[in-house]
Amino acid sequence: MADQNLIGGIHYEIMRRCYNPDCLTYKYFGEKGIKVCDEWHDREVFRKWARENGFKKGLRLCRKDNTKDYTPDNCYFGEGYSAKHGKNEAIRNSIRINKLKKASIGLKNYTDSPLYQTYFSMHDRCEREKNTNYKNYGGRGIKVCEEWSGKDGFYNFHKWAQKNNWRPGLTIDRIDNNKGYSPDNCRWATHAEQLRNRRNTLLFDYLGMKLTIREIAEIEKISASLLRYRLTIKKIPLQDAIEECKTIKRG
Image 1 (cartoon, one colour):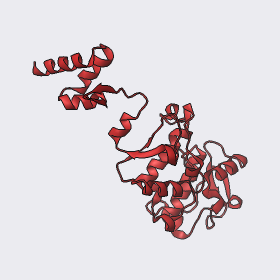
Image 2: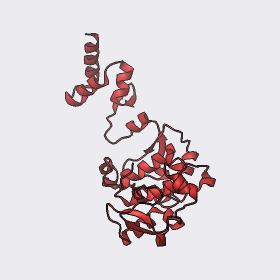
Image 3: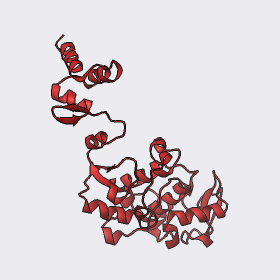
Image 4: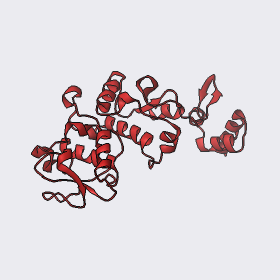
């Protein structure tokens, strides 16, 4: 369940309930023909309207006429519930929800797709200060490029992903960790490959290659935690640390 006190969450929820058939409340909205007006497909436009029209934490986005769409002249912030379904109409999230182009990219329930979750998480850690990883991303100036933001953001991101061999299980990896998310600085990687690219990942010269502690431990068939302790805490040279770990294993 999304945070009901964030404008981004409210926007996320109205898009989801109007366009995602897998959403539990879709039958009360999208299935009945309720839509979100075109201008509000851009999260930043909706955010600006919300701030100028009485948004406060704890209030819900309500429609004056529950038979009509989500539009500026039919919506307001209040404490009520929709008369028909009794569900509150204010939910959270902090990414830019782009204009849905289902026909162009062949997506139906796009908000539930693994690729969309990657897109959402990318924006969230760069833009929402309460995200636990914000300090390592938005907090140090990492941003998502304009092409992957705004109303066409996900559409553009989806096209880039497909052209660059995305498949479920891969993660988005920045080539230069000091630069933001953009087509020229991103690639798809396995979790192991991305781990190697982190700023704080230690690499050691071993067997003519730059390897992580875990990779060295796998080659030598020793405990990675024991090897890490000897290298990072006891500051033992690599070859001596490996031999100590082997001795402990034999013992």
